[in-house]
Length: 122
Image 1 (cartoon, rainbow, N blue to C red):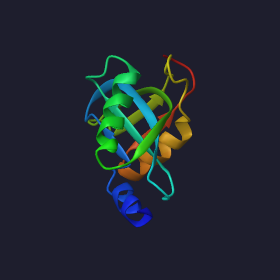
Image 2 (tube, helix red, strand yellow):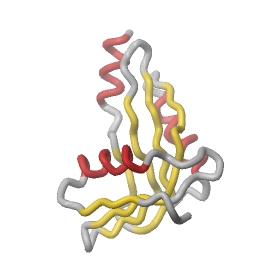
Image 3 (cartoon, rainbow, N blue to C red):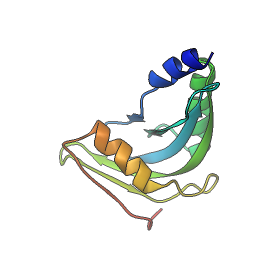
Image 4 (tube, rainbow, N blue to C red):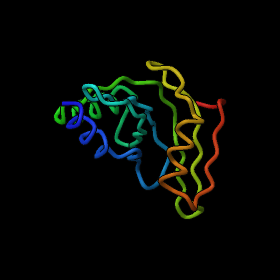
């Protein structure tokens, strides 16, 4: 079971965010049975609330036998024409995500971007 969970976990993308705009994001810790956990970033403009992002992510992961918890949220400003992403703000329901962790995940996915973060702002 641990091997299957590890395989399912390895197929979960570290980052899924919209290609442009300002939108909410959540930092989610994903776990498989007996497998190590990993943190993933999800951010989309369709989400009115951080909980919407988390609930959809949890549903998708559950189909693969994975569980998750929300570590916090914030906002992303994604400007592809400038190759910039700024991470800031917080979630009222989940608290502030560790933006430094989010930034590292984003840098891995967008190595040619300038990615910054700040604790201020909403």
